[in-house]
Amino acid sequence: MTDADDRDALTRRHDGRGFEECRAAFDRDGYLVFRNVLTREEISRVRAALAPHLSRDQRGRNNFEGVASNRVYAMLAKSPVFADLVTHPLALAFVEADLGADCLLSACLAINLHPGETAQPWHYDDSHYDWPRPRPSLGVSAFWAIDATTETNGATEIIPGSHLWGETGIAGAISETDFAKSATLNDDDPGARDDAVKAVMPAGSLMIAKGTLWHRGGANRSSAARLIITPQYCPGWTRPLENMSLAVPPDAARSLPPRAQDLLGYSIRPPFMGYVDGRHPRRLLERET
View: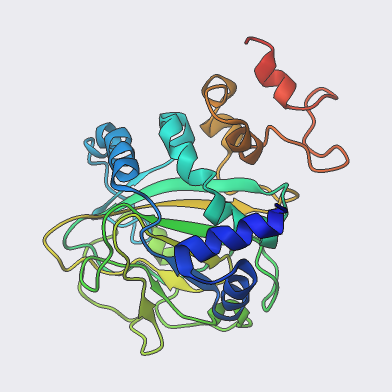
């Protein structure tokens, strides 16, 4: 079978539609949801690997991170279990179609919203690339629902089609004040919108979104936490958001599968972007093995 046949079979298994049909919807709406992708056993492995890090209960530093939320960064340095999500073929089929096979992992974090967390400011994930809109996305984000995401527990809110918008400001968008150290909880929601939808998903589901899609974490008005993991990807010629060479140093990267190593930057964008001392960066991992 060709790669195209493999992608077609993969999306039909999870969505009942072929890859090109799914990709057309992705290009139109800016996001796609695939329900029940992970098994219970896979979800349990992820939970177990995250448990010691969530138990520290380190809360966000500002309104964007969420002062009633836990965030776990540099996840591929925490456990190789998370590489299964980063390299999942369903997500990578769309990532590679949009960004190229030499794409990189830009960031990878867990977000655990506690009860009482308020809505996050509206933002889009590739806004750190200072190119005017409208433009092609310079990223794809995956959202893995480890807990079911519901109308009340903070399901990610998205504005369908907003990945195509120009330089349009919206109420409740991210600003400098959202990074203030004195952030507090409040019930005000200046960003409430009639055209937003909530990504309600069973545990084990996947949402992928264009880097230019406006979205935000919702308010958690339930009595339980809501956990997702979000790997985010960028083209191989751009700088990742997270400094992966320090976040996941060689000793940690050696334990990961080759595709995860590629995504961390132990790879080459042709003809030779990414070399180390004039050689392929994977040689660095082979020196002490």
